[in-house]
Length: 185
Image (spheres, rainbow, N blue to C red):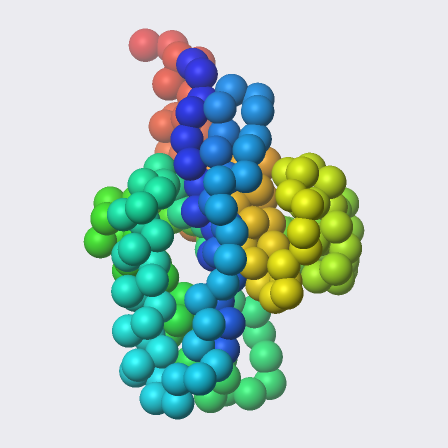
């Protein structure tokens, strides 16, 4: 079975949201697009969420991704910031579901591990490795854009098995679903 798909990666944020799109065809991975959704100048949180929804709807309609990957929530000390970030993630997930694009979540540590081999890698290390892999010339001003690419590439390297599929793939019913020919009838 030959693989041919576009993956949209999202690095959620309430000030800057990064996104990246890659095209996977067989074993070749090419950069489609990457950038940010700038939210800094929007004061009202609801307006930020609307902007995220509008921009992601536009990206999905323009690039027609087959799958979406998003960075999963991490635990912080500021509860209000966490709630706002969670809402931004929820809006991004809703945009993908609204267009019937399946999504998967990955922890920040797992994304860094997949790209650099080190779960504690810096944004700069991740960006440099992506530049080497995907061959883009200019480093973006906001590394949230490369973080979005990292999420997409992690999704590809993980064969679509993120936090949502973790339990399914490790359970007996998950094994049966993914290995139907191995079971004797």
